[in-house]
Image (tube, rainbow, N blue to C red; front, side):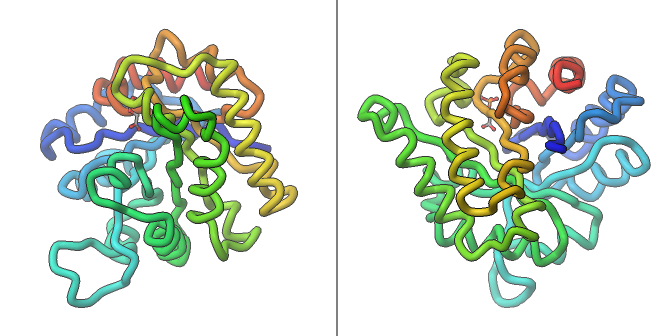
Length: 250
Ligand code: PGA
């Protein structure tokens, strides 16, 4: 059975105190919901207190990045082991902002996916085409390249702990959402690649949609056959709007 996973991606927003306050409110908003896996991706500085605030609740905490080594001389970096040790369960990887502003390649993202899985955490692998790719008819090619690159050398057993987030770059933070039909069409193509890589496991993998998902459009998007969740930026910053999206996923 595919799990519906609704994940927030706060990006570089919220102080530690703001994070704890939001999660305190969110816990009340989503109390008792068990049909949906609820995840919040927070900056490194909030992670420890975010885990403490949500322990025993139905909210899990994600990091938004990681360095693919367990320790060593990598000034300023954070390892999967460090995240695991404080109770982080998911890591968002390969977000388009990291690909664009920090030149992350598919190879580097693949190392991160493996490092996260090796610590027993779940990887949320983000892929997605830019506007110019879509206009040039390269959407499926770009997504397939990012998928195969990010998932290189991954076994079926490991794939069960990977979520794919399809985020068309032109829809992120722009208010422009892909129509449910257009998103479904791309998700179906992604599903095909996953099945070709992992057989039955590929059928079971959660594929999230991301890109201006909000309370007003979540239900329609989540009703699509191959849209199994959402990765939400802007609308995850407030407990009420994020909880509405979670409820739309029930
Ligand atoms: P958005 O961001 O919901 O603000 O478009 C989504 C994301 O970048 O994960």
